[in-house]
Length: 77
Image (tube, rainbow, N blue to C red):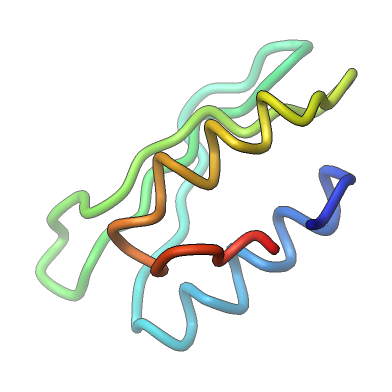
C-alpha cells in the first residue's frame, strides 16, 4: 500500500488517465484536500478527502474505499 501523499496523488492521476477522468481539487485544509473526479460529460463520478499530513492507515483505507467504485478493488495497494 502506498503511504505518502505524493504516492497517493500519483496513483490517482495515473488511474484517472487510464479511465479518462478529470482530477480536480476543490478545497484544501492543513490536513486534507477534497478530490473530485469528473467523467467526460462533467459528471462527478468520485469524491474523497485525501490526507496531506499525519497520514494514517485508516485515512488511506477511507480514500481507497471512497474511490473503489471508480478504480476497482485494491487500487491503492
